[in-house]
Length: 115
Image 1 (cartoon, helix red, strand yellow):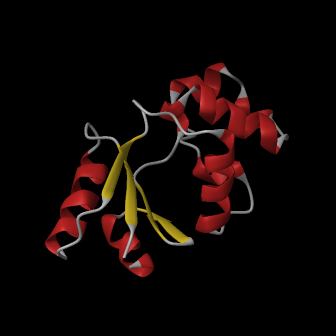
Image 2 (image 1 turned 135 degrees about the vertical axis):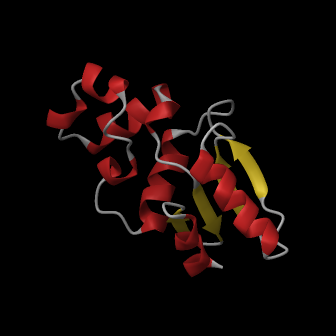
Image 3 (image 1 turned 120 degrees about the horizontal axis):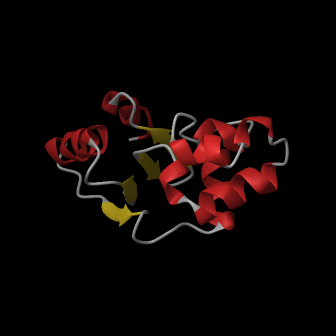
C-alpha cells in the first residue's frame, strides 16, 4: 500500500490525520506541500482523484489570498489551478492519496474511505 499525505505540520487537522494513519500502522509518504509546491499536473490529478468537479473544491476559500486574488469570480479551471501552484496556502489540507483515490482529512476520519 503506497499512501501519501499532503501535509502542513502547522495545521491541527493535518497532524490529527497523520496520527490517525500512524495509529493504523500506516507510515505514509509525507509531502509538505508548502515547502515542495505541487505542479499544475499534480493538482489536476488530485482534483480528479478526489472526485471534485472543479478545482475550486480543493481551495481554501477563506484565505486572505483567495480574496486578494479575487478568485471568487474566476471561471477558468486553469487559472484556479495556477493560483494554487503560485500560492500553495490555498490548497485544502490534509489530502491523503492511496493509488488512484484521495480524500481530504476534514474531519480526519474522511481519509479512512481511501484506505
